[in-house]
Every structure is written in C-alpha cells, then in structure tokens.
Amino acid sequence: MSIAKVIEVSSSSKTSVEDAVRSGLKKVAETVKGIQGAWISETKVETDEQGNIQEWRVNLRVTFVVQ
Image 1 (cartoon, one colour):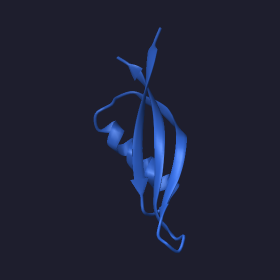
Image 2 (cartoon, one colour; image 1 turned 90 degrees about the horizontal axis):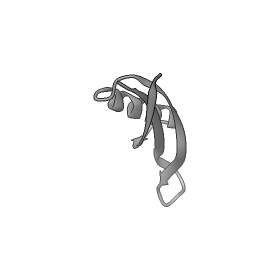
Image 3 (cartoon, one colour; image 1 turned 120 degrees about the vertical axis):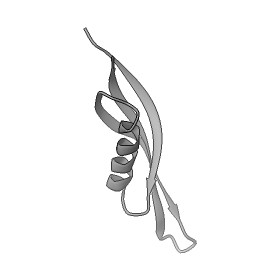
Image 4 (cartoon, helix red, strand yellow; image 1 turned 45 degrees about the vertical axis):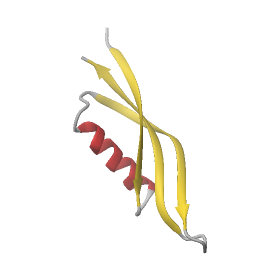
C-alpha cells in the first residue's frame, strides 16, 4: 500500500502558464521525490495599466508518494 501527500505551491512566469507550471514543478522536484502529478488550483495574471499581461501566476497542488 502507498500513501500520497499533496502540497500547494505558487509559481510565476513572464512567458506563459505552461512555463509557470514547469518552473514550479522543477523547483519542487529539487527537494520532493516521487512526484506523481499536479493540478492547477488557481490561475492569475498581473497586468500593467493598459491591460497587458506582465506575469502569469499559478497555484499548484502537487501529489507525491510518501516514502
């Protein structure tokens, strides 16, 4: 039997949502082993006064197997 744990992390990118997800997962993988997957629980954008997107932000819930 295996036990899974879920942690929530925030990540951002000036490029895209996908890049924010990738960089968040890469950072988590530096210290967490056995990552099984993740889902985006929230997406947000930061804009300038003209409405241009300056930064993409995501909250991720990352699932991993407890060793």
